[in-house]
Length: 183
Image 1 (cartoon, rainbow, N blue to C red):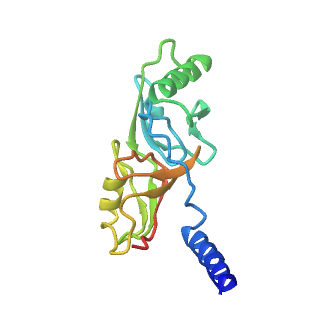
Image 2: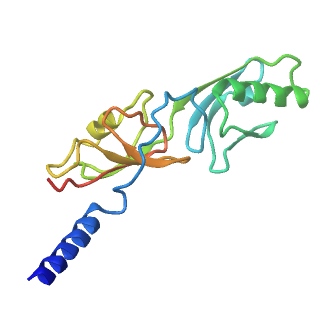
């Protein structure tokens, strides 16, 4: 009878381990306060240059992280703050000798989207809004389903992957996965 109990205990331990899933040991995502926003592919930017009406337009950061501007060429935007991007555009205008002291202003019109899937009412792609948390992202997606794990979700970010709670911040481009709760 003791061999039966030993085998049964072993089978139960294996079954419980497999139910925990691959993400059971996932580390929490760093909850440091986000720094200044950095541009990336998919962001929509409005650029105004005083005295150069040909450049005044709305541009989309391409998948290479660059924006192609008339009379200047390509300017890298990805990984830069909006202030740094304005400076780079002004430097490019100065280098081409189009204007001696260019006055450049840029503003983000639309942020790149975030994605949410799993146990939410309407999984999909949604526009990012500054200051979003996991809870607001779930709300945008119609709320949790009845079997969702409401305490912890998995977030995949360009630089990291980990677990996050309802109050964790969401960044543009994040993939949020709401998992099923077993109890």
